[in-house]
Length: 221
Length: 198
Image 1 (cartoon, rainbow over the protein chains, first blue to last red):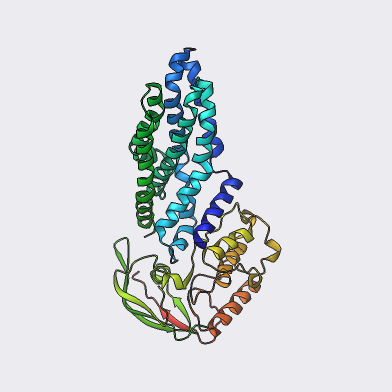
Image 2: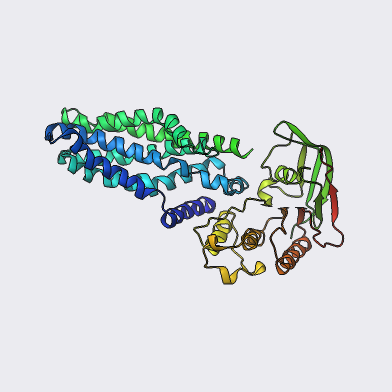
C-alpha cells in the first residue's frame, strides 16, 4: 500500500509542478463553449439540445489530448522498470497512475464543465443529473486514455495513434453519458443510462489496468 | 544481516533482437562477494544485469536465489543507465519517492547530497544525478546490488564514497555485481569475463 500511495502522491506533485496538461485541456473546453454559439447562431432551443453533447464531446477530446503523457516519461526515464521490481502487482501500479490522471485532469474538467454548459443554455434542471453522469463517466475516460497512453508509450509522436485506438472505446461512454442527460428532456427516466454508464466505468476499472500492464511490459522487454 | 545468500546461474543464455549475446554462462555468487563483469562493448554485461533483475527473460537457463524466501527482483537494486529522476522534483523529493515506494527511508548522507537536498533535480550535473540514483542503494535495504557502470561521471571523492558503501554492504552479507570498465579498486574482486560475439 505504501508503494501505491507513494506513486499517487508523486504524480499529484508532478502535475502540480510541471503542469499535467490541465490548463491546455481546460482551454480546449472553453474554446468549444465559446465558439459553438458563434458557429451555429443564436438559436436558444437548438443550443439547449446540443449543450450536453457538445460538453461531453469537448471533455472527451480534451482528455485524449493528455493521454500520451500518462506513462511516457516514466517509461523513458526508467521509473517503470524499477516499479516492476517490487512485490506490488504492476497492474495496480498502472491503475494508480490512471487514477492520478483522473484526479489531476478529468475530474477537475468534469466538475467545471456543467456550469460552463449554462453558456450553451443548458437547462438548469438538467444540471444535477448531467453533473453526476459526467463525473462518473470521466473516470472511464481517464482509464481508457491510460490504455491508449500505455499502448503508445514507447512510440515517438504516438498522439495520433492514441486517438485512433481510444476513440472507438469512448463511443459507449459518450452514448450513455449524453443519453442520461437528454432522456430527462423526453420525460423518460435517466436512471438506466446512468447505471449503464456506471457499469462501463466499473468494467474499465477492472479490465484496463490488466491491458495497460501487459502493454507496458512489452515495451520494457 | 543477510545470511547464506547464494545467487546461482545455470547455463544462462541471453538473446537480444534475435542475436545470441552469450550462451552457457554458469556462476555462483555468495553473500559478501563482489563480482566485476568485464568484457568489450556489446558483450552482454548490461544484459546480464537486466536478466538478474528480472527485467528481461533469459533465452535459456535459470537463475536461482537461495537463502531468501523472496523473489530475486524484489531483493535487488538495479542502477542502470536510466536514472529514474524527475527533473521537476527536488533531490530529496526524488529520493523520498523511491524510499517510500520500496519501504525504506531516504538517506542523503553517504553521497553528500545534503546541500543539494532542496534543489530541483533538473539543475544537477551528470555526476550529481549519478550520486542521487546511487543513494537509492543506501535508502532501501536490499541484499543484491546490480550496478551498471556505477563510476561513470563520478569524481574521486564520490568514487571513494561508493567504495565505502559497497564495503559496508559486503560486510553485512550482501552481494554486489558490477559491470565496469574502470577498476573499482577492489582487492579481491572476482571477475566474470564475457567474451562477446563480436
